[in-house]
Image (tube, rainbow, N blue to C red; front, side):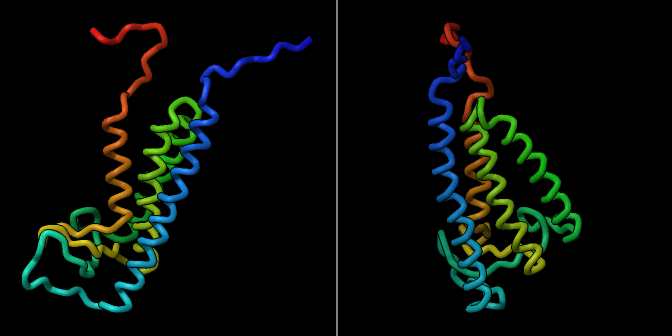
Length: 168
């Protein structure tokens, strides 16, 4: 008779499936983000100056550089984005079974980065359309990246071992 090995992480298959279903809306957010960017560029091809900025405004901002409008060569930004994406994808793949929430957070960053990478390849700049406090320009892809980073920061670095008291 062959012995059947029990799953070392009970519920990990169910949790992985649940995370797949959570990634689907995140991917839809990137598709919506790209549609909003294309629509915004069609309606407002030039950047609009905000005369009286509010807490949140909707206007087109073309960011040719890195985050926060830091100037950088487009080719280097695209290459660096692809390289970082590959590293993150490998990290997500390696942690998927053991730490699905960590992998999910990494996938959020990757999805957001793919949205911005698409902009850089198609338009030569990242299209931002949400202006916060008249100064900060973001889009939904940026929000996914930020959400993934925040999740990585608040999730525990290591899973506590079963049977070990970590309360003191």
